[in-house]
Length: 201
Image (cartoon, rainbow, N blue to C red; front, side):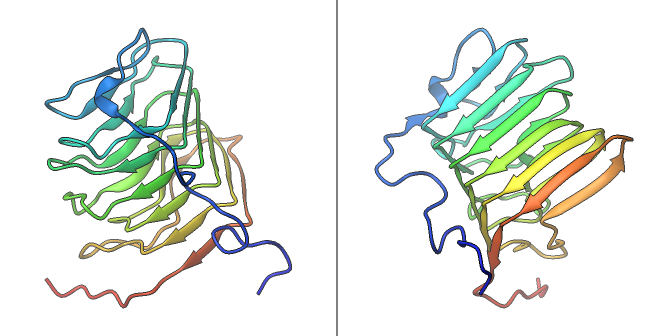
């Protein structure tokens, strides 16, 4: 084993035990609004949005979308990020903005995601920080850098059971068109698998 403490083994990661969660359908403010019918949580505002203790799996399931020019700083923490009854989008969290997205102490669980290509996070540049999260049952990838210049901090996370769907790729990070100036700090993460994947339909 490594000489450093292992996330999910030596210390807890993911949503803290005993967290009281609110449904994502309660999100409604100047920055982000939730559509209970479609599951879209659209963050078209221009300020900072903090989502703390949210259950994204209730009802049809909620997914976050930040358009170009949307919220400049999104923080999601102490939450359960998962699919509901009608999940068919490509990402649980998608940012096409050049702002900042910070995800800490969340449990991502893709076991009920129906889209073959569902990945947890997709970003088009900006800054992305992932710390103390637990990622499990990913349909495909954990993070997709689609385009742009990205400053990534990806540390102290536990990852297991990824690329569950047929023809998917086991990518902890997938890089697209990487802009000049992109930086990354990827360290002290822990991954394990406890299943044998089959691509038999």
